[in-house]
Amino acid sequence: MKSLIRPLPVLFILGVMGCASMGGGDLLGTALNVASNPSVQQTVQAVQTASQEITPEQEYYIGRAVAANILATRKAYSEQAATDYINVLGRSLSLYSDRPETFGGYHFLIMDSDEINAFAAPGGLILVTRGLLRCADSEETVAAILAHEISHVVLKHGLKAISNARWTAAVEAGVNAGVQVAGSPGLQQLTGVFKDSINDITNTLVNSGYSRGQELEADQMALVIMRKAGYDPQAFDEMLKVMKSKLKPGGADFAKTHPDPQIRITAVEKTLKGQPAVSVASSAENTRQARYRAALGAI
Amino acid sequence: MRIVRLCIAACLVLAAGVVFAADQKQMSVTVKETPVRATASFLGRILGTLNYADRVTILDQPAGSKSWIKVRGPDGKLQGWVSLSALQDKMIVLKSGSENVAQGASTGEVALAGKGFNESVEKEYKAEGKVDYTWVDRMQRIVVSPDQLAAFINQGGLASPEGGAQ
Image (tube, rainbow over all chains, first blue to last red; front, side):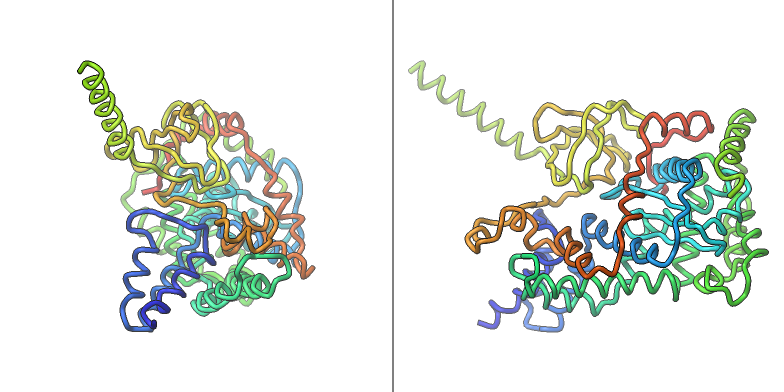
């Protein structure tokens, strides 16, 4: 009897945490193999591993909620030309990343704040402040800012901020959920787990920040995206130096959530050392600068 | 005798077809919608669109290509190139089984049943009234058209976007 019961949590989590997926070598197969082992601990481990495979659809709903929470206490800057520009620039940059398409796509919004801050919600909802955009003085340096945020999405850093405890809770919610009928206890329990997961991510983005390793990883990926796109990654270094001069110690923005810019500058310069500069035709350079000034010159 | 031979030949053709079909790998679309293009490039002409959970048949993946794959859509007619970032090997099942229907849930609820963090969870979360999605919905309505994208890339002297940072 026990051997029949043990795989149940694994089956439930597959129902709870994602659209049913079928195929050779998938999570179901992996999880059941472990679940057939007498060790309960191994079964729980399998549940946790399986649950961390969040589907793109779930990532989309998590990202929407995270962005909504961040925007709950921040005002959007809705100037049309500026918004259009960062969207076409950001969308272009995403095409040179390892994840050019997400469930709901990449979308960018400027926040009306002097803080030097940005938030990349899972799935591709990216929020940047006017204060951060003022650390840029060209299309290349804006590209540096957006490429870093896109990299957080590609690397799924937001999802990694969800506590492991949520997955155990999600299993329990799945056991009780049954059909997700509005107002049912199962759905309410699952929504509770959802809310806790959103809080984990939002708290990381707003208060504690990603780890230094994750920030440096996003910097390195941004350099690759920029070079592939045809932007000189040297602009990333320039942007960080302006940021360093503007950040105020003790601030509630990047000063709190990001490594010291000097640490990032050192790592970026180490990577760029010896790499050839990206050459740009003067006509293209003029176009870039003209459209940057038209859209963000007065940001 | 002639009829028997014809039957055997027909069976062999059918069997070959089954074996061929079984050999053809399939993948599922993991994004809301993704364009099918005439060439393996984000600037390629758009031939049609695939939707979430659509099952596609793989027709060609050039050696060394990590970013693009040639597929045939579920209608059997739409063929072209799709970004690999929009596909996964595993099948996506959108609707629950008939046992859930027997439990008396409405059609919409059944379609969402057992799928984790989804629209019904978001509705429940919104119903608490603490979070306003107005700006999130507004930013998701911002669409960059393929023409806008192509003009931005070409006029700004950006590289041809084939996808993949590594």
